[in-house]
Image (cartoon, rainbow, N blue to C red; front, side):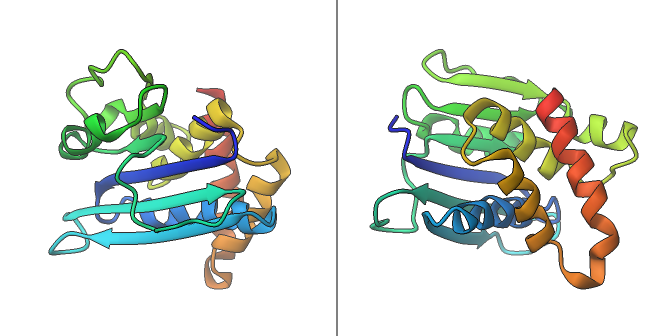
Length: 179
C-alpha cells in the first residue's frame, strides 16, 4: 500500500453519518492540498437503508472516484462487512463497529480493528457520533493527515447551523483515537 494514496470505503446504514465521516476525511485532504475524491452512494431508502461513501486521498491525480480495491474500510453494520470485507487489498485496514456487527472480520492478510464505536459514543454522551469515533480510530492507525488538519476538517464539515456540534465531534475524534 503506497503511503501517498488512501482509498477508503465507509459503509453501514443510512443515518449513521457515513457520508459526513467521508466528508471530514475529504476536507482533511483538501486542507493539505492533496488530490481528493468523495463519492456518496445510497441504497433505495436513505435512513435505515444501506449507505456508503468512497473517499480517495492521493498525491497523484485520481483516475476514478469509484473504488473497487479499497486500502481501508470503516464498517458500521454486518451487511456492509459481508459485502466489503473481501474487497480490501492485502495489507489494508478494516475498522469495524463491534456494537453493530455479529462477527469480526475473518481476513488474516489485513489489519482489523474491532471497536465498540456506537456503545462508546453513547456512554460518552456522544450519541450519533460513532462515525467520527471510527474516523478517529482510522486516523490513529494510518495518520492520513496531520492531527491539526483533522480538527480543522471537522470545523469545516460541521454546518454553521449545527455549530454546537463541533466540540462533540472533536470529542468523538479523541475517543476514537484513544480506542
